[in-house]
Image (cartoon, rainbow, N blue to C red):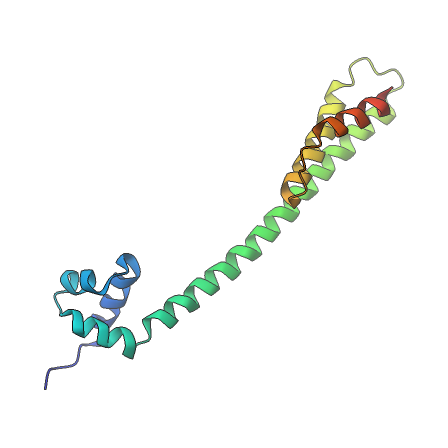
Length: 133
């Protein structure tokens, strides 16, 4: 009866499998037979372990993406507010282009973040121009 592999060797097989994905390559790299790799892949449930790790990483990344999007939306809204404030507080607007660019950048950034960018840049420009005039 062959000697069972140590926990360390089994983990080495699993880690190698995660990197390369093929049992035959793992067998050659770790100096064991492909049959032994297949045996421990089933016995140690490598596929399930990989899926659990993938789900956990996705969950963590989704949470970070949401936080990043919220932060970016707040920045875009601040740009819009600053631009509107500049337009509203200026008695005689000599150069409203900075305020307009801030509003436009905020609107486009927010649309891009939320996925609502429908190519309506012309509409935004018309609204801003009407607001200034």
